[in-house]
Image 1 (cartoon, one colour):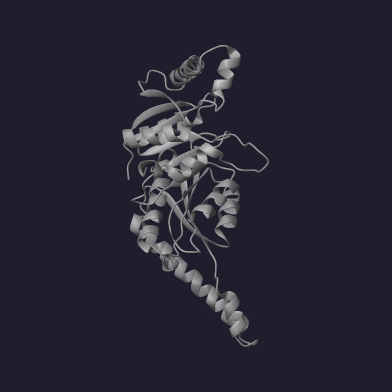
Image 2: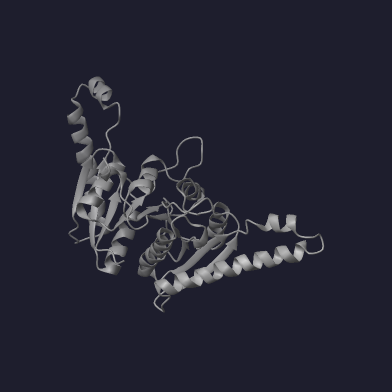
Length: 319
């Protein structure tokens, strides 16, 4: 999965880490780079226009011109002498991004995450949540304090194929997570940790149905058997994607719920980015059920790359 076209989404900030990261990704893989800037009209633009004594279109045009001027200046400063296709679109930001991705057949989206707002700590706000759910291509959301290219990448996979409602879908999604992690690790030769959160759900039943003398031994044997099964599944996954010498890919299995394991390992490993699937119907214990994935993403303090399974169709194409 080599990208042919990478889309960088610029905002009105001076920090354009998304543009720099997108350019490095595109250059490493020989892909074309495109830049999109979105102007989202406020819902009360009519009231603003009336009180300001100007037509709504006039106000939006002024804002659009100012945004375009700022972004073009930053683009020229960060990528001097480079002729990069640049567009400014007016409308709902996530809709305009997804429309551009579909129309231009972009393979990757790189965007700065929205700032934190509201009472609850959520890493990604409305626009980003929509992109995670609806964009058909991988979305790389960078945090404001992102420093340079990643040095350590976590690829979060669910190798519990036996419990999946759609084993082939989950297997394909795992492969795409690993492949995407390799793509973004390549520009800086970053280390990749293939992380699987596992748990022995039947341990309580082993304790309940074993004699008191044998309960501990039986429970330990059960835990070891589950772990070895997951290790074998991880080996098959990595063998299937080709664990070559061109990257530094380390498997890691940690016991616990995915929400806790991914967050704690992100801190412990000082990960610069986490790659994970966001949509799949994989049974009650699957890592990638929508709400679970969003809970994980919202608990992280580092950038995230969200990957969809093969065959995913954006809801924007279903109406």
